[in-house]
Length: 468
Image (cartoon, rainbow, N blue to C red; front, side, top):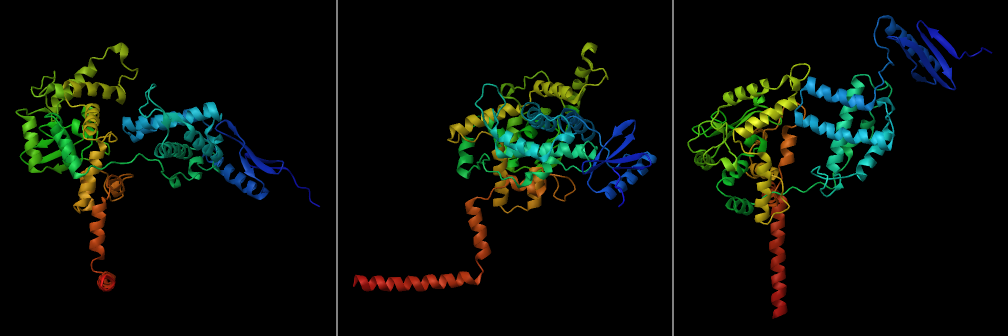
């Protein structure tokens, strides 16, 4: 009987058996590697031959990976979004907040240091941990706390899945290990406790506008009739973004002034005559500067940078950045995007531009005044706008364009008609109208009418006999 050996060698790679499992041992870039292969000796020998060939030509071994701590992975991934993908600062801020939960989990609940040690079982425990958390919705330490909503939990898990996908592409995960967040079925998780979306009825829209003062009316009428995001409205500049003669509103990126459209998707929005006239009255004699000013700067535009064009504001921004003391400048000589945004925010403030936070608080006061205290986000005006477009049977592609979502051709991830559908809600009367049009010419409708007439006549005859 042939003796079964517990080790073998293929070139620079040694295979050895421990218990019933085979392991490989080799050096790659000066580091010793000992990956686990499995219980099949022949499979281990074939993998050893492949690994030896790759090492010989200087390629990474098929089983090689770089162990890295989860905290280090998070920083590399965020740097990738900052330096390579150039994601927006607000998006990176949300990704950081989402992954903070994971770092706290592996620090205080289930100590796991390396990315390769985080398993699907750990991911499931992390989901249970998130469902028990209680946080203040606005992040304030003294605010009332509540559990995370399903939508928030799902977002956190999707962000973590994306981070581990990055780890896999950079060979920080074992080659035979799956993304732990892909295994647990995130996309199948139901959203059961989402905050309900309120859509204003025509009567409520009228009541809302009638409750507005002269400063509030142009702002909220514009949001209602264009579907703009509040951030887009507060970053409109004269004369480039508003063409009164052409009845056109242009939503443009302004990276030189520290502002970008959420989707980076620029668009032109036609204005109805009534809105054009309201804006004409609101602007008055101004020919430059923000279209919508802060309330305290109306109507005389008393801001320190009032009446400056976009190019002039950009020049002032660069001058302010250049005046940063050398002691406060970064070692590489260039400020971060976050620092630049802070300077740019000061430019918009000094130009007298309306503030998105002030618009939100004003919106809350107005909705409470008309009996809708649960409506606390100006975004519902955007939802109402999209719903009204559907009520009027506007072409879905035009709706997509007016809403400023990404093109619906699949050329870019996210957005598209699917995102437009998120903002579109079918009113009961619209559903009833569409259903009536779809069933009007079906033969069964005629049969139903005949049955109604026959049955009504029979019942009338029976009632007459009973009364007689």
